[in-house]
Length: 208
Image (cartoon, rainbow, N blue to C red; front, side):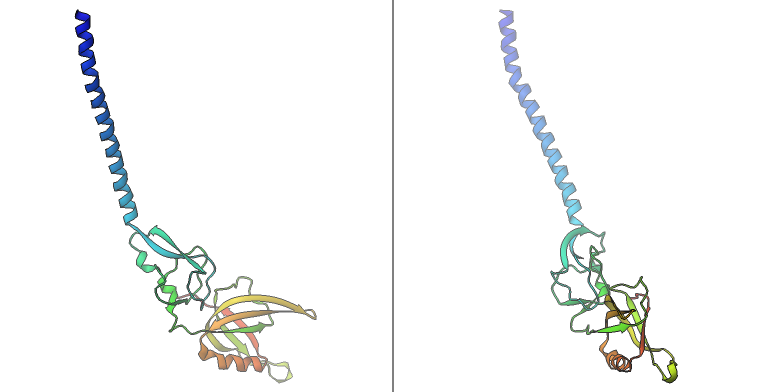
């Protein structure tokens, strides 16, 4: 008799204990889910879409989907310093390397950025440190009679190297360098080329 009453009491208590355990587990799961959502919101709240270069961008290049892609990143409130979408037409004022976020300080509106490109032949090889995207000044030196030369003249200010190719002929090595520069310098450079002036490139600092 006593055993039957004990078993009956135990059966009554078991469902209640199970219900309590289930309630605790459900409550714990909801708490964990809530904390996760809060953390996710706090992380995603600081992330912004910005553009990153997928290829080498040279001065004068248009910024479009062929050389950039959009990424989401938390820049700690600095996202306004970078291009976030392709709403208007931009061109690069300075070189931008692959993987680099596209800074607004290196861009110009397409209507305002007018650059002319020209290939010049350099008889004396330029420094191996010079590469596409570098900023240079162009100096031209007149070849005078009797093998003498004049003073170097600053012909182009703030040009950008786009490409460098080396060629050899008859034992002499020369380099063809494509540069981009303001159109106001084109007449002077064409005159120097027609005179067969000696042309030299000198690195200048990249200042925005």
